[in-house]
Amino acid sequence: MRVLLAFALTLTGWFIPAPVLAATGDGTPTDPNLSFVGRWNKSNAAAYVPYWAGAYLRTGFTGRTVKLRQRNTVDLWASIDGKPFTAFKGSGTINLTPAALAAGTHTLIVSYRQVAGSYTGDAVFQGLTLDAGARTVKAPARPRLVEFVGDSITAGTTSSQLAVTDYGFKAGEQLGYDHTQIAIGGMCLSETADGCWAHETRYWMSSGGQAGTDLWNFSRYTADGVVINLGTNDKSHGVSNADFQAKYIAFLTRIRATFPTTKIFALRTFIGRYAAQTQAAVQARNAAGDAGVFYVDTTGWLPADGLSDSVHPNDKGHQAIADRLAPIISARL
Image (cartoon, rainbow, N blue to C red; front, side):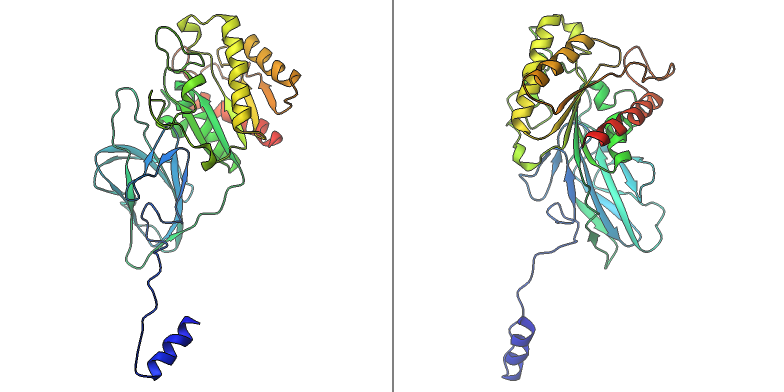
């Protein structure tokens, strides 16, 4: 219709150009071909900021090169065409393709290092720069979204590439699901007198568990599965067995209220802390009529050389966990 109108107006000696449409495929943060998985702050249309561990952006693109536009120095990992993640560090324009790719259509995943603890990198995505004439392409949709809730173990601490070499990220990628890790080092399930950051309150916050920040808007996504791995730190903060069990029941109940149909998986902590209480909390929810909550016994999942210290899995340990966990998740979703 617009073409016919322009043609008719041209015949009469007048030409009215067609209205300019919003850009699609330009690689800016608002480009609809970019998928932002996890909890992202999108309040500034020119710069999106990821929260918590394991949040990532995903897209396709044409051409032979792709670059990131960053504000200040940050560490990140990128995977192109499904290849292993490569580490990058820099600010301004970061070239993700120092060796040009073959011409064609490619896929891209970018995950920033989590801003937490002593690390204060500037995880601010300002867009992609592509070859002249190239554009972004919507990546194929993924059928499920799984959240992994935990502490430093779920954030990938001591693994070679932190969040992207963590069991949650690996299990999600193996399944072809979207995934995010709601985790920070040192977190507990329970708020304690000595100040342990706790998921019983901070899971519902936006920005990485910082006290006083806005609550997360859960209407922005619905998790098909929530995998919980909590309790390793509570023991060190003196939480009693009875209190832990009661708070685990309350946590499961509140997650169910947030996600009415989501499957919830409560993992035995890998070193066995509060195993009986975790299982009892699941049983309590089942007895209350919630058949969508499952206890996952992780006994024996870690190989003898799967830890980097007394608590944290190394790359081999995370891979072993992912290999055991992925089929359990898949069977329930």
